[in-house]
Length: 364
Length: 239
Ligand code: HEM
View 1 (cartoon, each protein chain N blue to C red):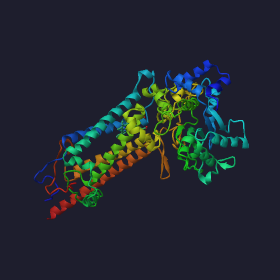
View 2 (view 1 turned 90 degrees about the horizontal axis):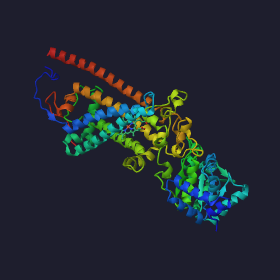
View 3 (view 1 turned 120 degrees about the vertical axis):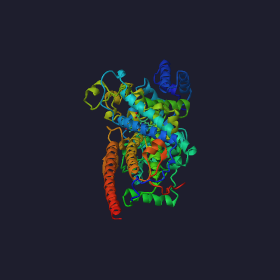
View 4 (view 1 turned 180 degrees about the horizontal axis):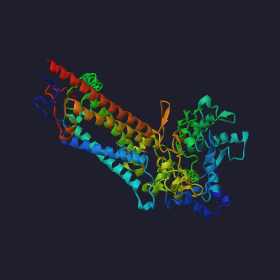
């Protein structure tokens, strides 16, 4: 039997006091209320660690980078030992054949019981040749591991939506996990973001092992506790938005005063994430706090939605690219002009007809 | 001698077309659309920043508030208007149910198009809407408004949050349908211009018909009565 979390923590020199602190802080982060702290503690004390296979497809490793920086008091020690991270080619000690052997070992040993954490996604074109791991397409590794896992975590925007490698025209046909054809139908939880917030990642894992199920998900498969509100809804600059105080350009007085970044393209109003509440680097800051608009990295297809500094997507077509107002105003001008011309012609025609009838009348 | 000038005496046979609820709806709806276009444009392109303490000002809040209030009036009006299509007179149904399955509808539509292209010297005569007007209003105003209401409520539900009826009934499926929230904003914004374009056409056509057609147009939307300039029979198609 594998060790319990608690045993691992104690072995790593963590006191019981710190352990209980961790449990209550995690309960708070998950929005569960203090009564859940003992439940988390109990789970940690009695449950064996969950084995996790952490596979990397097409990605930039920013999810891993974020994860290992979880500033939650004990994350560094706890989270990494909490899960039995059996395979993660970026941070594991083993390499080469030895490392790859662990995948099969885990699959055999914990068939149907391990969590498959996917960072990045597989390319489908050229039979997956654009992402080769240990001499084989990542696509095969992914499908094989998914076949035997209990559930899948899609880390980051790559695994959840596709991200930059899937941006138009997507030459390798990079495909998010839930859309990979032929993948075993396992429950998938999406934790989007480029990268996701470290504390969100660790909290999701803690929830899964405490309650042995996924937290409540929204329609798109994201945990509601972190993705049910927009950055805008909890933004500390929101009063400036309601007041009508906007930054017009990055070096103006408004920017110095910390006004709302809406007019310089902030995508806070259209982005579901926890940045404005959990923030980054241990609650130190987040993009808007640093004076830069949110560019919506946790939203589906954010690379294909035009400039990072426009709130709305440009419309392409007929070889032109324009925003909604340019197109609309042009169309309204054309329609208005056409109406005016039509009115003019109608008047001329009417006068002409009148003259005609008068002439006819005169003759008869 | 000419039959065209209205000075020639003829039997003035007026028809009661637009019942009071329809007229009321028409003008309230028009005012709401005007308010929604102005505030909607300002939501997309906010006016220059106001200075001073944030807590002393609520400018953008008010712009949005007017947008949402007008939106709810428009929605309730639209629902009541649909109700009236069932209980009102036959003209109250016209823009909701153009008889597109009838050949004569398309024939007369062609005639109306010719009239607008000035290829024919005399329009047909209608107590209700002409076929072209019926179809354009059906597509642009009925479906245009449905589009704005559905996307608008989806955006509104994002603010009221999960668990609100706006979110559960609209945002939860509209946002994934369009891709993401930003796309819903873009389409909601773009369709404002579609509505503006057709409002221009609508107003122009109403004025032109008022002057050049064989029946009253603008005054009818105030009084409800349609009057005619000649006493030949009307060409309405009944669905
Ligand atoms: C003729 C009807 C309407 C027009 C022309 C209109 C126009 C607009 C425009 C241009 C925007 C700005 C979009 C952007 O740039 O992000 C907007 C935003 C919005 N509209 Fe409408 N709209 C209409 C109806 C409605 C309705 C029926 C609702 C329902 C409640 C609604 C709710 C909203 C909401 C919630 C926003 C977003 C506000 C924000 O981001 O702060 N609209 N509208």
